[in-house]
Each structure stands twice: as structure tokens, then as C-alpha cells.
Image (tube, rainbow, N blue to C red; front, side):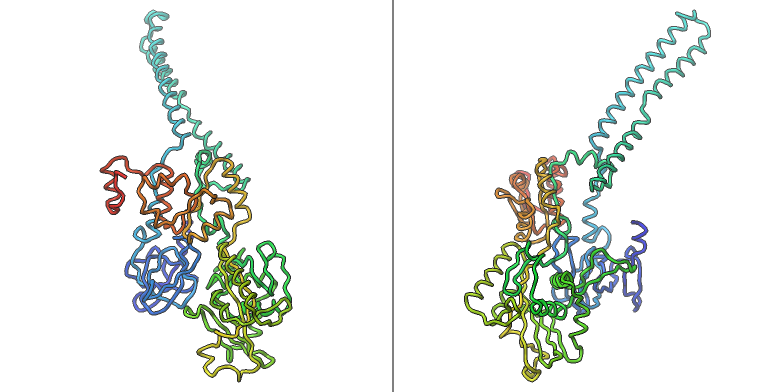
Length: 542
């Protein structure tokens, strides 16, 4: 780990030039040069006019990328990742323990505390020592007395020396020097056995302390879920496929071709299959928008290569891609096809795009006019997916028989707000890991309370918690901002029912765990007032 840290490099603008240095050598006032895919080594603020997106899952647990700009949210936080955008320059304002990541690491640094086994061993060692000292003293006294009773006072000096040596030998033998080694070997053996059960132990003492665990506080993203936005259900070719049916669905070739072309062309994201050392990754990394990455994974699972399709159908000279428009809530691509026709691809927010759709694709890939009842049916499907915490997206298209039918200003203002044909509705979510439900049920059966603590929004967190069995009908879900404002008495009142804490910061997570463990709580009024002097709402009386 130390060697890996020494090999890390980041770009810094110093003395009118960009140089590569180790993040350890960064100082406050440096200008960092960051690009998509870079890890942010220090807290900094954007100083140029470029816009980037940052993934702050390492700090907050939220999988959503956040937009960062000089005139908006300008703070880039250490340990986070720049996912997309142009090269940006940022002024370093916090490093080491004064950065957000450093503060979290500082909270985790605690004094070493003996485990129950270590306390018992120390107590036993003391008792053995006392017994050995008493035995040695008794033996020494008996031997000294025997000099006169058995040897009639002959060789007194030699008798005292022999008695002293024997007493010291008793003291030395009484102390169990091999006991710590035997305990260590036993714990190491336990670690090996647990590793075979797919349980990796970093600290030997955990073999003992884990047996006393009564609560498990788990993050959501990457722990309970796969940390990969995935299309899990949707409406394709006028047919609804749920999460079980989606894996086995067979689409008409015409429907599949339209959807595949849209996902391959109308995008800004792409997949990285190898790391910086050229080694093939077990799972490709998504650079750019995670939702578009989910669509790329979907067509990849269908057996299509998005890069090959893009190269075969998109002409940089005449075709155009319009990135996501926050006002229109959509992104658009216009391509000139080989048969002389023009096709417009559009994808975006479900409710917004649906309002602009007058047609839909049926099972055969034919364009059918919308009826009021059919449109209401699709709206209901969107609501059902949203209730299950799925992010919904509508993909649509529109055909023109020739380029002359396009508006004169199509290159700056695409005609993507009317007469669209709805191709599909996709439901996207970060899915549960396959063994999570069983693991949660096993822990609960053993009497261990499982809680979800995540930075995601409360609707998504609650839905995922219900799916894996964490959130029950009598359980409670709260948000971090609400939790941190509670008095200790209020926290203690909800802890038995608290099963989900959403939108939680690292400090909220630390506060919850320390409260559950019962330590780090001030013992007296003065200590309480010193610890919470910046939070007057938390009084000793409450």
C-alpha cells in the first residue's frame, strides 16, 4: 500500500508549466489540473470557466455525479473522482487532516483497546504471577529454615544462594511466556477457517470480537448493491418486461436495431476495458454519465459493439449530437442515413419526452399512433417503476424522408419536441448483489440487527432496504440532516426501530456507530459542553 502511494502522480500548474508530482507534495495554493478519470487528491475550488462532473460516492455514498463549475458548486473534494468534462484547473484549499477525506480518516484513528480475551489473559497472567511470587517466597523461607533444621547451620552462604536461585526459577517458570504465541496461532487458524467461508479478516482480534456483534451498519452503494447502474426492466416493443423477464426477453430485430443505434450514437459516455497498466478489467469502468453507461451495458449484453455501430452509422461531417439540455431534459442526435433519409434520436426524462410523443413502436417495429388509453397505460408503467425506486428514461426517434424536410436551424436547434415515436421505456437501478437477501436473513436470524446507512435519497434507500429485507413494516427510515439535529435522548428513543438512514454524511455515520457502541459519549456536564459547544441545540438536560 505504501509503495502504491509513492507511485501516485497528479498534475499541478507551477511556474507557468504543468508538472507531475506525488499527491503528498501538494501544498495549499497549488493549482491542480484535473481531467475525466482523475482522482482528486485534495480539497480545491474551480478557478476557470470549465464544467466537470464529480462522483462523491466515496464521501457520501451517492452514486449520482454532481455538476461542478466556477459559478455553481465550485468545490471539488478529496478522494472523489472526476467522471466527465473538460480539463479544469482548481485551487487547493485543504490537504491532509484539513481535507474532507483527512477529517474522516482522523475520526477513525482511535486508541487501541484490549479485546475481552486480552483482558482475561492479562488478569490470568497477574494471578499466575502473584501465585508464583507467593510460592517463591514460601520456598525461599522453607529452604532457609532447612539450613538449620536439616544441615545444622553448615554452609549458610551456599544455602542462601541455592534458596534464592530456586525461588527465582519458580518465578520465571510461573510466567507463561508461550501463552501469547499460542493465542496468536489460534486466532490465525481461525482467520484461515473464516477465509474459506468467504470472510476476509484484516485484524486477528476481529475473530473474537465479531462473535459479540449485535448490530451491522452497512452502506448501500457497492456493498449491498453492485455499484453499477443497470437496466433491469422496461417497456420494449409495446411489451412490459419485469426484472425476471428482462433477462430472457427476445425483441423483434427492427425494435432492437432502433434501440441499439440510439444507445450507440446518442451518448457522451464510453467504457474503459483496461487499466492504466494495460491489464484487462474484470468489469469495464464507465467514463461519463452512469445512466448512459447502463444503456451501453444493456446493448453489450445483447451482443452489440457500440463503437462499431457508431463508426458505421455516424458521419462527423454532416451528423450532429446535442448533449443533454437541462431545460428540455433530453439529449438528441441527428444522423443522415445511407438510404437518403434522416433520423432524429432523442432520449430524456420520461414524463417530458412522453408528452412530445404521438406514436409508439409495436412488437413488429411498426410505428403506431398513440391513443389516449395507450398513453395512459405507459404513464402508469412509468409510475410503477418509479415507485420501485427505478430511474426511468424514454428513448424516442423521428424520421424524415429527406434532409430538405429538416428546419433551416436544425444544427443549432434540433426539432426534438414534437411528433416523436416512443421506442422504449427503460427502468434503471443499482441492483442488489445476488447473495444480499440471504446474508441479511441469516444475520437477522442470528439476532443481529442490520441497518442501512447511505448517502442516497430516502426513497431509493427505502426501496432497496425493503428488497433485501432490512426495512420492515414497523421499521424507521430517517435522513441524515434530521438525525444530526436530534438530541441524545431523541436518538436513543428511535435507535431500536431505526433501520435506514439516508442522505447521511460521514459524520452522521460516525455518530450513529459511536452511539450504538455507547462510547464517545461525554460522562459529565463539563465534558458534554466542551464537546458540543458548536451545537447549542444539544443540551445536557436533553
